[in-house]
Image (cartoon, rainbow, N blue to C red):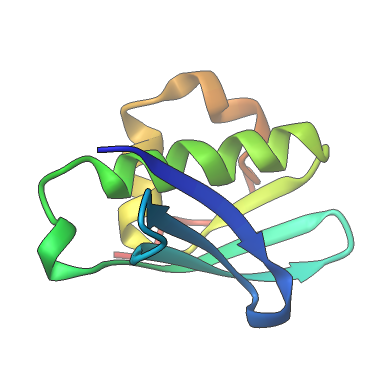
Length: 100
């Protein structure tokens, strides 16, 4: 299965779609200058367990890196994913506490 992730700034979210254009999941965000806050991740139940969440997480972090943004991961899924991917540590705001 091929998943494509694109930014939908008018909806303040990144969207993951399959090859047929079906919405597989999304990550919502709030952007303030160079700071992006990832607030929520949601994967459609029919796509759960297929790596959509991880694909979304990597895509939003790669986008933040490409745009030199500082990430505030409020979303528990993104926070948990980042714990397993220390290569993104330099993008994460250090002054914030993880929300459980």
